[in-house]
Image 1: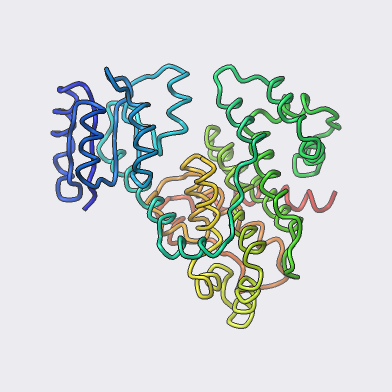
Image 2: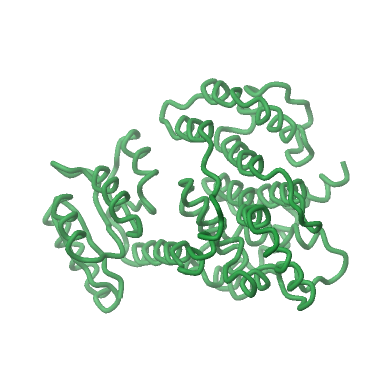
Length: 401
């Protein structure tokens, strides 16, 4: 049974939540308090799985409470349940809350949000993952320029000019972004010659995703594994990101398209870490995959006890990526295990990853990722697969150019 702490300064709101969530009493042990200080006292005295808080409260507001919970109780899932907030507060909450929901909130929506967040927390907190990561000397940290870039893009006053100024500090990243913008993946009919022009055409979120991806890949120069190369994984990641974005747009999910693009670009980050930091063990993974004719993730689970999806989720969680993006990375090979049964970034990335692998094999390959009917049917999108294949035909176009 999950232990959930609700925090709101309005007694009537707390009473309403008690009545509304009474049917959840068999699944959640719920505590209701009226201030941030009382919430911290409860957390100090008892273990909780989730904190659900309002933002606008006297004395200690929800942002300060979330900051302290994040530092002192990092394993506790943090959910905001609030009315409208100003832009500055919203930007601060983005970095602190796992999920943000609006009042009034349907109990089923709150239940799904809570279950999704807890499931993702359990993945990155799995003792097997912790034991594996203890064998790695160190994980890559987010480069300073990327921290500065993400902070600027999240700012309400973000501008193309400021973003371009930050990015030009890294000449290599700037030239690589221009190279990617002018590649067949983006299908532009004219040459882009400046970073300002690239940002204007692609938008801040797309450029952020490309910059983050390039920073990730730049930390892994080469592998001593014949089956993989940094360039090969980069090529697959670009194709998956573009396809995921096209799938989201085909469903009219413009708000999710940028997050799907970023998740697709970064979905194999864990593979980079394992190939670079655990080369010998990963060679054994590949031998197991070939000899047993099982998928890569099955071989990883057999040899390492964890998969590259989980390792990537852990690392990018440390980097502060949004929960929807982390969910897509964590479950892209096993989406049927995700509590979410609605179209999301995960849907787009799972399908895009399978599509690109299909286009890169000659004949049936038992080791290649496959679409999961056990996931796609409950989500209700099986009939959309042909349309998505058509939307993602850019892969063949890119190879032909």
